[in-house]
Length: 173
Image (cartoon, rainbow, N blue to C red; front, side, top):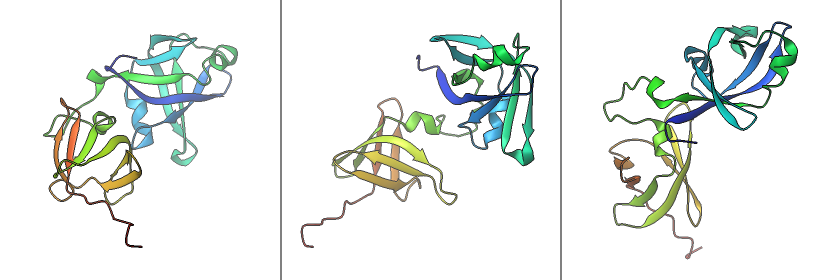
């Protein structure tokens, strides 16, 4: 998959008899996936651009459903179950002054200000208070994403993040 595609969800069911599909969303909030069209859907191993004709939030905001162009019955919709949904990076609206998104942090190498490599960012964990970097190296490290306190610099082009973080030394235990 090219760097211009961002996986934002997956088709995980069918809804009704007119070809609507249920959506599992990776966006936050979950309903934001419905704001994008066209989607790129990996159907039978090939990425296809498919326009979202209509969409709804069902059942008190828990279920997302969409009607895709040229998918007009339940049997055709069933063929899309399990397909990944991506959008083109250009569809994102970037309101950050830094010009990067959380997805850009995945794969960045994390090192302390002393030059000790902690590992690579595997995911961002949304906690409600501060989002957290899950860094995997020799061991897993969770670092709150708080700029200027724990996160000293982010260089997306070099895929490097410098942190103010000390690993606990268990040798005295």
